[in-house]
Amino acid sequence: MNSPEDSAGSKASRAISKSVPGADFLRYYPAHRLMAWQPQGTLDDLMLDQIAEWLVDIEKGFLPFKRFVDLSQLTTVAVRTRHVFKVARRRAEQFTGVEPVRTALFSEDWVAFGIACFYESLMENTPTTF
Image 1 (cartoon, rainbow, N blue to C red):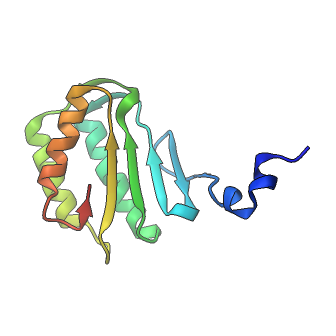
Image 2: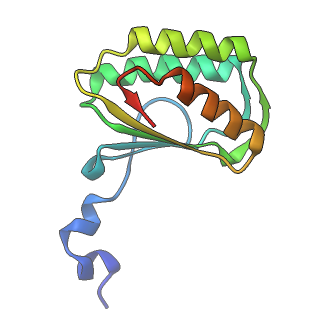
């Protein structure tokens, strides 16, 4: 019996994700130039800093890639508003890409969704589109 990959041809096999160094629950889909991350636990100032630092590091080693962050597995959101401002400003200054990147943020929780929308508005005039 053939597997789904066999019947779909090479396109299905290219969609397989790869693990990359960095945060837990992080996958890279090379065929789509997509980095997907599903952070878990508490979104606080420390986690936000870790996300930003990781992005700076990973942007140096990869071609430009799309980003998808699924916030649905967060148990608590405890990030300070002023810290979101600082991270957004720092990200805008540190982005070293030569072409714009696309970012998608997903959340079922209204607080995390609000933080994502707030961050999106702060990144409005940068090479990052949401």
